Length: 139
Picture 1: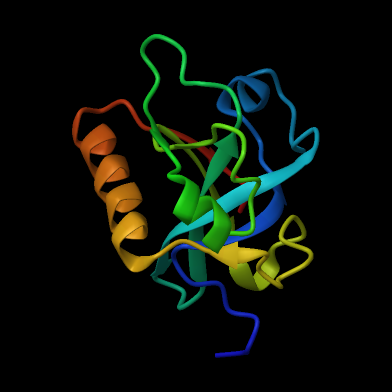
Picture 2: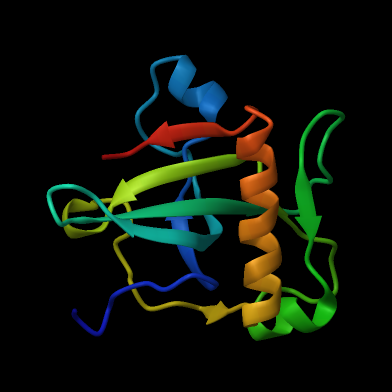
């Protein structure tokens, strides 16, 4: 694959589309925000679907699920280590890598450690198993 192929744990600027925005008919995220590639799979057509989790400075509201980013991980991802940040694991965007117009700059700003990336994926899997994962398809 090409050198710009995202891998789990990498953090990019991405116009994340929140599920409530998609439900209102919006098709574009309102602003670029740091987001984390969490899972990459190959679909039946042989194309790569990337699942992207948003990073936010707002603590998860009641009923939401997010992982607080430790200071060390914030530094690795080149995020501000002086503010509280969360990776939301209950809401993802699915994007088709080969056709994505949203993932414009494929140069990651940084990446989380494998251990923290595994914790993100585990959190997503738990939310999905509980039937509470919100997904906005950008494909």
